[in-house]
Each structure stands twice: as C-alpha cells, then as structure tokens.
Image 1 (cartoon, helix red, strand yellow):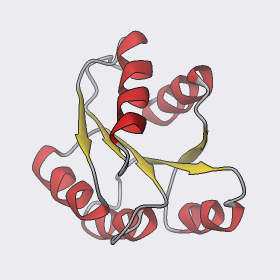
Image 2 (cartoon, rainbow, N blue to C red):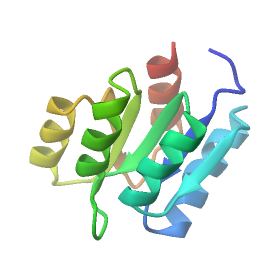
Image 3 (cartoon, rainbow, N blue to C red):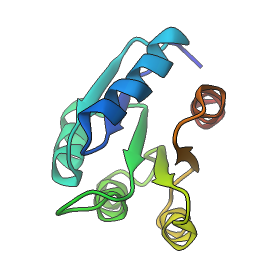
Image 4 (cartoon, one colour):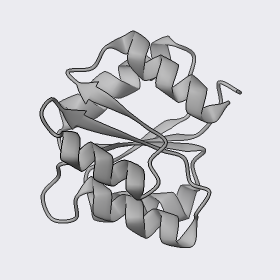
Amino acid sequence: MPADSKILVVDDASFMRLIIKDILVKNGFTACFEAASGIEAVQRFHEQEPDLVLMDITMPGVDGISALRAIRKTHPQAKVIMCSAMGQQSLVLQAFQEGARDFVVKPFDAFRVVDAVRRVLA
C-alpha cells in the first residue's frame, strides 16, 4: 500500500478534516485533499479518483451515506471508510449496506484511523 495513495477527507467541520489529515500525514500519507460536503465529495471523487475516501456520515444537505451511494453508483469499486460519532450504529450499518469498507468513531483514535486506512488500501 503506497504512502502516496490519494485520500479524500470529507467532513463539514474544517477542524475534523484537519485532525484526520494531520493523522494521515504523520503516518506517511501525503496525498490528501478535502471536501466540506457530500455534494463536494461526489464532485471531488469524480475529478480526482482517489484511492480512498474518509467520509463523515452526518453532514447538512447531502449526508455521507447519500454521497457514498452516489460515488458507488458510478465507481462500484470505490473504497470508503465512514466516520461517525458514538451512538450512530444504525447509520453505520446503513453505510455498510451501501458499500462502506470500514468505519472509525469520533473522537478519532489515531491508531484506529491509520489501521483502517492501511487495511482498506491493502
């Protein structure tokens, strides 16, 4: 799994995107770019064709599950890890049904994020 894998980080909160990108960069993943909404995630995915997407489930407008569905409709092989807060088990289950490969819980544990990314990219 190359460290130059392109990773799209999607969250409506800029500080959450910053936290995830910081974790990834500190672990050798340098090709990270961002989207601040579900709509932007779908657009950026089609433009950049990342190797992996880390996407928040709960976002205003187009949520992460809807964005996941839209991405996988045209790119069924897309590798997506969903991010959620505690207590959103039903949403996590729905995300898996839509094709998510893994999920990480907020607040983020750096080891868990990196482990999930490495496993899904492998």
